[in-house]
Length: 88
Image (cartoon, rainbow, N blue to C red):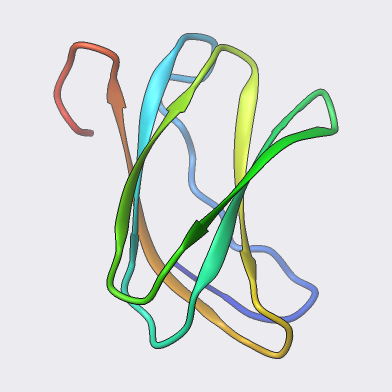
């Protein structure tokens, strides 16, 4: 997944409507943050450094967005897994 500028690239969460984990890996040269939102309200922003991976708990109804640093570009992989399941 790559994103740049005002447009948005996205992923489809196959577990939407239930609690799950998002596995986000930074494959780019710059840091970015993962923004967790629910009903349009920002709940948390989690920094992801260059080369770092994060497992993020998403509760039912929550969404994630990847935000680049100013002037930067996000290059990342995003996978999802059930709370006690296999990565999809």
